Image 1 (cartoon, rainbow, N blue to C red):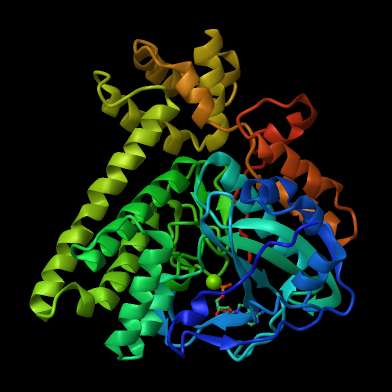
Image 2: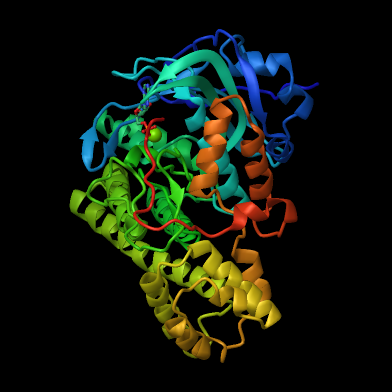
Length: 480
Ligand code: AMP
Ligand code: MG
C-alpha cells in the first residue's frame, strides 16, 4: 500500500491567499463511496484509498506532515453582488500530488468544519449534497466535460440542519486546481501588484505551462476565455445548467466546479432555471454564455495591471481578448449541436436545419436527451417510430425530418455524443433520499449507469426514460 506523496505548493504564494487550517475530526467517519476508477486514472494506489489511514486523512484525524491543510481565500460576485471575502468556509486543501501524467492535482475536502471564512455557516455539508456533487461530477466526467472529480464520500456521524436534519458528510474532491476567478478578485483587492503577479505566475506554471514568455498574462487571459467558451458550449450541448455561476464558482482551470442547484434539462426550455434562489433567471440554460462572459470581464479587470503599464492600453488589450469569447463559444456550440445531429458545418443547409430543430425543440418541449438519442437510433436503423413517439403531434417533426433526412447524417458521430444516461431529476432525488435513509443502492446503480453514458445497458433501462410529468419543471435547492 502506497500513500500518494502529498505536499502543498499553494503555500508558496504570499500570505493572505490562504489560512492554515485543521479540518474538524469527524466523530464517527464512515466511507460511503470510493472512486476506484478515478484513483486508477490518477495513479493513486487503490489499496491506500480503501484503507484506514486514508479514511483518517479524509476525516480530519490524520494529516500529512508535508502538507499542513489550508483554507483558501477568495472573493466573489454572487448573483451580481460583490463579496470581498468568501473563501473556503467549509472546505480545505489537504494535499497536492502529481498524477500518473505528472500533472499536479488538489485533494480538497468539502464539509470539514468551520473556518475563519465561514461567516454564519456551520462549515458542514449534508450527505445528499455531497452525493449530488459526486453523481453529477462523475456524470460530467464520463460525458467528456471538464470537471472537478469525486474521489470519495464519507459520513461524519453528525447531523446537519438545512431545511430539515440530514446526515453530515464530507466530499473528497480532486481538481487541477481550486483557483477561481474569485481568487483573482481577492488578489486584486490586496492592492499589491507583487501578490497579483505571484498568483498569475503560479497559475500559469501550474495550469498553463505551455504559455511562453511573450505577454504571458495576455495569453493567460486568452486561454481562460477560450477554456470557458468551450466549457459552456459543452455544458449547453448536453443540456446542463450549472445554476450558480458566481465568480467564485468559475475555475481558472476550465473545470466545472461547485455543483449546487445544477441539473440536466429534461423538457427543453431555453430559459430553464434550476435554482430556487435564482428568481430572475440569471443562470438559465441559454444565459450561461452571457454570464460566463460577465465573469470573464471581472477576471480581465483583475489582470489589468499585468496586461500593460498604461491603463488605457491594458483596457484595450482586455477588450480585444474578451471580444473573442462570443465567436469561440458560437463556433464550439454550433459544432457540437451539428455533431449531435450527425452533420458538419460544410453540409449544405446544415445551419438552417439546426435552427429549425431548436424551434422544434422549443415548440414541443421534448425531452432534450431523448430527442437526440432516439434520433441517433433512427438514423442508425432507418426506423423513426421511437423518435416520433416522443411527440404528441408529429406534424412539425415530420416536416423537419423531411429536410433532415435528405442530409447524410453520420450515426457514429451521433452515438458518440448523444448520451442515453444523464442524472435525471426524479431518479437522482430518489437515490439521494434513499441514501440519507441508509440505502445506497439507488446511488450506486445510478453511478454505474452514468459511467458509460453512451452505451445501452439493459439493466438500467428505467434510467433512460424521458420525463413524463407535466407542468412546471422541478427546481433544485441550494441546501448544500
Ligand atoms: P457555494 O455556494 O458552495 O459556492 O459557497 C459560497 C460561499 O459560501 C463559499 O465561501 C463557501 O465556503 C461558503 N459556504 C457555503 N456553505 C457554507 C456552510 N455550510 N458553512 C460555511 N460556509 C459555507
Ligand atoms: Mg462555491
